[in-house]
Amino acid sequence: MPREASPESLTPGTLVRNPAAPDWGVGQVQSAIGNRVTVNFENMGKQLINIEQAPLEIVDENGT
Image (cartoon, rainbow, N blue to C red; front, side, top):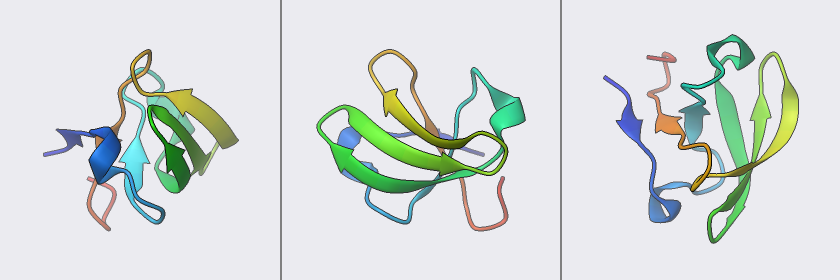
């Protein structure tokens, strides 16, 4: 089961999902500075996310 991401857990390469936008697919964290995280999503491309406004979920390598 996915778990909510904290700023400390979002290192480059971490796989995440935006539960508010499931159609974006799985994304890979590119960078994280404080609460601002750049993620490259399968179906939406590169997005800058403020995790205070839009929490992300960490997923495993299988995308679950």
